[in-house]
Length: 204
Image (cartoon, rainbow, N blue to C red; front, side, top):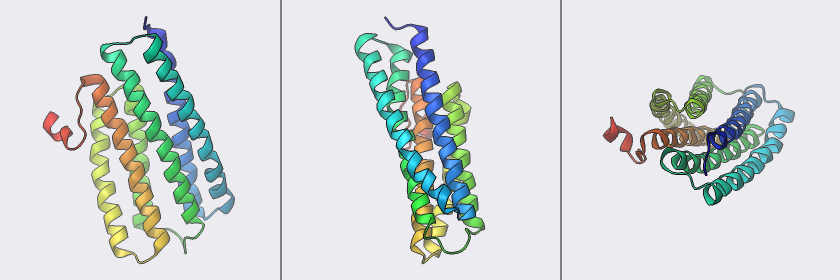
C-alpha cells in the first residue's frame, strides 16, 4: 500500500538530484565565463554523478510502482519523477557539452551568450522550484522563459560563424527544453493534463 512516507522520500531524492543538476549548471556557466579549464574538466567528470542518480531513481520508482500500487495523483507523481530524472540527467549531458566546447571557445562570451546562459539558468531554477512545491504558476513561468531562450539561441546561431559558439548556444537551448519538460511533468502530476506539443495554450 502506498503511504505518504513513500512520497516524501521520493521528493527528497528528486530534490537532491535537481540541486546537483543546478550546481553543475552553475559550474558550467562559470567555466565558460572564466575560461577555467580545470573547472570545465570538473563539470565533465561530475556529469557521471547525475548518471548514477538517474539509475538509482529509476530503480526506486520501479519498486514503488510494482510493490506499492499507487493510484491517482500518487501514480502520476511517480510517473512524472521517472520522466524528470531523465531530463535532469540530460541537463548534465548538455553541461558536459558546453564545458567541452568552452575549452575551444575563442575569447570571452558576448552579452547575448551571457543573457542566454542567465535565461537558461532561470528556466532550470524555476522548474526545480515548481517540481519541489508542485507549483503550477512557476511551471507556467518556465514555459514563458523558454520562449526567450529560443529567441536568443536562434539569434546567436544565425549570426555566428564560430562552431563552438553554435554548439554552446544549442546546448543551453536544450537545457531550457529539459526545464520545460520538468514543468510539463508538474502540470501533468497536479492536473492530470498533458500539455506537451502546444497543450499548454489549450489548457489555459
